[in-house]
Length: 168
Image (cartoon, rainbow, N blue to C red; front, side, top):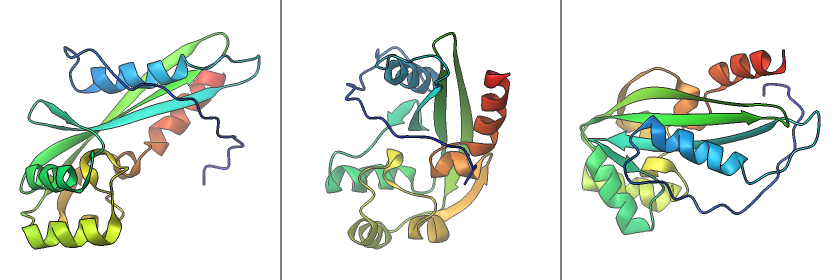
């Protein structure tokens, strides 16, 4: 949608970070870890990112299974959490890491709502076990403060500005 030409390259990276890292330190570390797995030639720009949901001093990543997703959504219910995404821009000459934080407040979610969502949308590949653009976002999110696209998965407005600065 940003009208940028790109290709997807995959590398397996074990997404493990030091336990002492907190909030955006976690995502900054992981975005850069992913970028460091690639060798770049001239005139290439690599974009890697990582997103976590941060609630009460705890990183909530992708759920391990249905039960884990259920527990995560119960934790988010009635609370405000942060969605933190870090992006790493890397070329053969330089690296830039930036992050965006969005506050998301969920209304109280009943167990039935959570089960309906998990059964019908299966958000097991999403940090925090939800997608704001799906049913749960329509019925369960009271408010957001910050970038909506960050919660979807990539803070496109900030990314575009940073990319323009990176190439100039």
